[in-house]
Amino acid sequence: MLLYKIFKFITITTMAICACGGRSIKGNHRDSYAAQPNELSTVIQSTDNLKMRGVTETEVDSMGFYKEVVLDDTPLTTYRRLRPENEADWIGHLMSVDLSEFSSDINDSLNVFIRFDTEVNGYTVTCRFMPFGNDTETGFAVLNFRNDNSDVFLLSDKTCFYHTLMISGSGTMWRNMDAYEFNYIEPTGTKSYPVNERHPFGYYTPFQFVDVDFDGEKEMMLNDLAMYREGNGYRPYKIKGSRFVPFDIFPYDNIVNSTVFDFKNRTMRSYTLYHADFGEYVYFSLPREKEWCITDLPELHSSSYDYSAKEDILNSQILAIDSIKEYYFDTLFVYRRYGHSLSLTDKIPSDSPRYDTSF
Image (tube, rainbow, N blue to C red; front, side, top):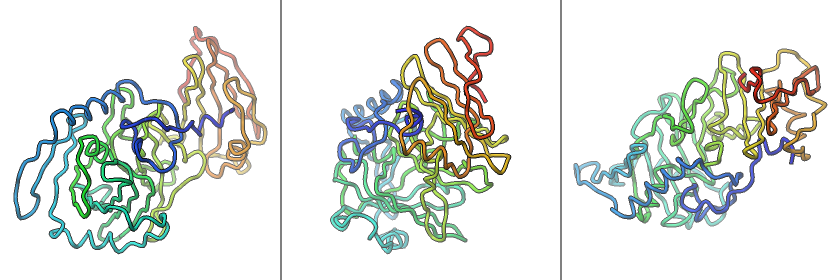
């Protein structure tokens, strides 16, 4: 399926413990590509180690936190079990949120309460997590972002954090009304997925704020921890009143770790690998002219347009496609924008100094 595969990936159904919700997830992942070998082995090794040695718990101040657990070292992931009676304020606040938009059986779910140990973009963040089972890493969630000026909620029907993945993998069973403090994992990179000025997303970071549409306001990006070949997916949300609402507009609905941003020039590049010998880079930018919609699409070697993908491209509301660079075996095919069309403009052999996929 052409160019659709650039943004819409094959369903994950057999990721087991390595992808969020693999054992109990309601709904399917969008990508069948496995994680890169080093990423996959990191999670498997961490989980196996936990199963072998169990979880090391340390008793601390009985007036507040009473257990601390170090889950693994890559990244450093800790949680502390809290006494719910000491956390009544924010737990009660989360419990007051209407859950009617979730499925009818939500009232039968377990309730686990989480707060993060540091402010994120000026917000104190807490979560009511409702796992799909007492040993699963994925579930419904209500996240609350609070500061002196705002009290914003996010309702998510399929949420997984790296902490819940590791806790579930350790054999720990969720108990109703448990309360935890998780350390917030800062956006740090991995060998396959670096974090730098063009790759802003932390592979293990549960959520973060990034201005992905270049409008001067940061979007809240929720990590799905699905471990696609291109990295994890990051769903953007915007604030509307007291709620975070999905920013599911093409091409922002398929941002992954391998998506490249040039914030200075307000451009972004997506990349999809179909095979060892062929893949596609698609370059977007904020349009400079008033009339910029694409009306004529080229035929590509590696994919074909289905109806929904074609509609997305032809009706893009914010970013315009500037060009597509498709490498197919030993040749780079370059399609550039001219007016309302994308046309083949160059064929570059792989041994040519002009073979370049950068912006």
